[in-house]
Amino acid sequence: MSSSLSPDANDGEAVRRDRILSSKLYFDVPSSKVPVIYSSSYDISFLGIEKLHPFDSKKWGRVCQFLIAAGVLRKDQIIKPLEAKKNDLLVVHPESYLNSLKNSSNVAKIIEVPPVALFPHCVVKEKVQRPFRNQVGGSILAGKVAKEKGWAINVGGGFHHCSAERGGGFCVYADISLCIHYAFVQLNISKAMIIDLDAHQGNGHEMDFAHDTGRVYILDMFNPGIYPFDYEARRCIDQKVEVVSGTTTSEYLKKLDEALEVAATSYDPELIVYNAGTDILDGDPLGLLKISAEGIAKRDEKVFRFARARNIPIVMLTSGGYMKSSAKVIADSIENLSKQRLIDTESSPHRT
Image (cartoon, one colour):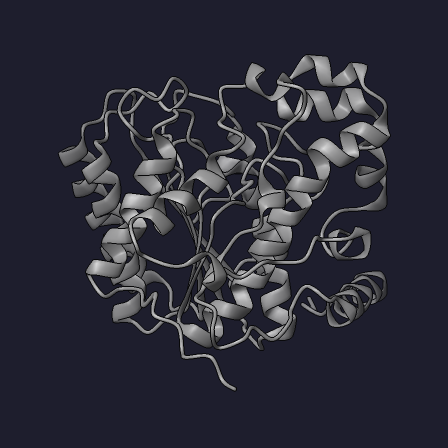
């Protein structure tokens, strides 16, 4: 049988390619910036209603505040992304899904905050969807920056429960899938690896790349005893590593070392998207694992060493983490990456 795409599939790929090439989300970043991406528009403030979900909806801004206070970077060095618009989102999401988000009750279910259903779409779009779309813009841009600089950290994103046609688990848009599709077209990349170390299974990107065998390799290390229990998506994981509730730091890091050894001999990617959720932290009410803050820093260090040793550009996304302490844990880990010289947060001098 021929492996070529059907005429309809070819047309769909051509439309996707045109949308990516016409997008404004990739732009030239001044040399005075470092590969850390964030905008104050990431943070969600919605009459206090956001506090009904365990996620710290101002986590992203607090990460940057900690990094600035620690002297890791300056505010003017941070890259501010553009908001992903409808045409950008259509690269992965069908119009039917985007239209479903005009119903506030659908958005409320996805972000797991029922009172959001009571507000008109115009309010929900501004207060909830726009912050997420800005983070999506950051994840997409991170691919370009990583290719140019060797690494990029989007202080946000990592919405790994959202697939092209379905959101859930506080994930409205499929930023990981979008990042990779943009990289395929704009960066002349043909092979990508997703390393998903959030406590939860990354069922969204797994469904999106279920039939993209060869172009995307997925290593997912997750707790099988918690949400989302998506057994169909689990069949799409190239390298599945299960870490049960109560797993300790030493057990976790040993499993990670073994997993990275296998990944190193299984696939040779041109881009790594690292979903670095901190919901593995001891005490996290949803992750149910027992990893110390130091263990998370060591985890991130191991993944960056894996990428840098092989000269593979790496995008890091912050993903889940449901404790107020998560922001400081993320900042401390990024500071450690800088101290270990796995990332360089010294920008080039301003040109006059």
